[in-house]
Image (cartoon, rainbow, N blue to C red; front, side):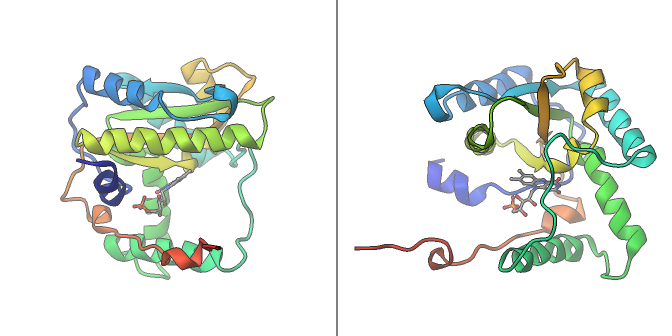
Length: 219
Ligand SMILES: Cc1cc2nc3c(=O)[nH]c(=O)nc-3n(C[C@H](O)[C@H](O)[C@H](O)COP(=O)(O)O)c2cc1C
């Protein structure tokens, strides 16, 4: 598989088989992702990867926190999305709900779909990603470079992922469980495992604008 194929094949997977990824495969994916670029090569991503019982404990704690306390992310989430972003956002939600067979007015179905996030969609592994709070927005860019590097390394190995900002809504619960230092802010989690093709949500396909929508070529 070349890089273009990996880029075109990767997609967010929201339903996993109950089958762990062998530790050497996991370790290799994360080792390859270490090659991600970062400003001044500061390599700011800090990551805890769970397996087995640790994934169960983490997802249980997250679900409990999400049902009993209000979200309080370390880094503020975007509020309203102006256009054209709101149109993209709505299309993404519609693609997912359509795949799941959740109708527009089905608030119970939507709540269940949201809560599936806190179970990491049944993934056997979760990577929780944090960053030193003292370094600003450019460190977030570095984390983005790292995230895509990891996801492409996963695709190459037949492993699926879903980046999940949702897993950062209750950072104190995660910090306590995984002994993440207080000076690190939680940014997102990543569900990792093997895709369960029978899960309806995995029928979801998103689209992209033509390149002219984002890029101007100037001579
Ligand atoms: C930083 C980041 C956070 C995300 N958070 C979530 C999330 O909390 N829950 C979720 O289901 N998908 C989440 N996603 C997945 C996006 O919805 C998905 O990447 C987008 O719709 C494009 O679809 P694709 O990944 O299948 O190409 C996130 C993606 C990124 C990059």
